[in-house]
Length: 324
Image 1: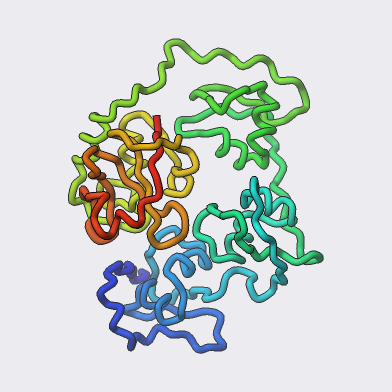
Image 2: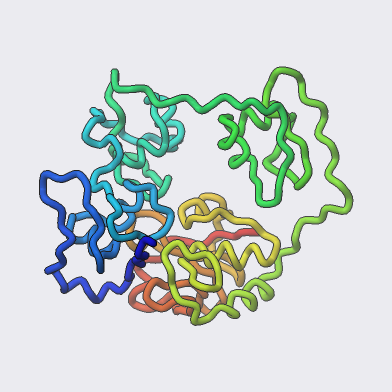
């Protein structure tokens, strides 16, 4: 039976610089030893924990003795690269398409942990003549029945399509879909007019007080990187879980929640407030309670209430958006 090791998130052990988890400078991988954690291995090899997880396709911080971990980004030693300066209207998917690569490869080349980019940012891109990105596998299915939790973006991505194509094939004029709806996945024939949604199919009524009351139930739940249940939350996992209890589906990461929300000049109860912390752009968020207070899952506090005007949060405030 493999011995399971769980990463400690305690930053206080930064002073322990004598860990024996550093790989030889000429090695490309590291074998997990007894007592190792992802944090120890990444720290001693000048990587972040997120980079180490990304390089090894890890979805959690669990590792085991004898496991071989790559210390290099996939193909980073093989891929020749040029540069590209981000322009107005760009997105990672558009840049990837124009340079014959994938969003995943772009993020790996540039050590990006989200899809957020900014105008003027210089990105590494595969040089002309490098191996082309594999095309999405063509879909064999002709139709797809919408399931709970689906979105047009998710369905399109899973079937090698764009949202624009999917909307065109189905004569859709908005991004609204409903459970049980049958969508055409090819343009071989003109799609019939969309079947009316079953009646009644009311949209959930947003109730800020109910949302806040639900969120406060989890006060004191510890912070867990990647956590999205009452056993432990990270900041976006907490928001997604609480909004879901109210019948409202939001994206999983802070950056994508920021993009999906509607900007507001001043937050109202139930709106989301965003902050810039460890990276440029939106990287932390919480539910606005009124009186400059917000409810959030803090990395050092767990689920708690904080004052937006304190010395830490005030200079990091980015803006507010409504999710209704």
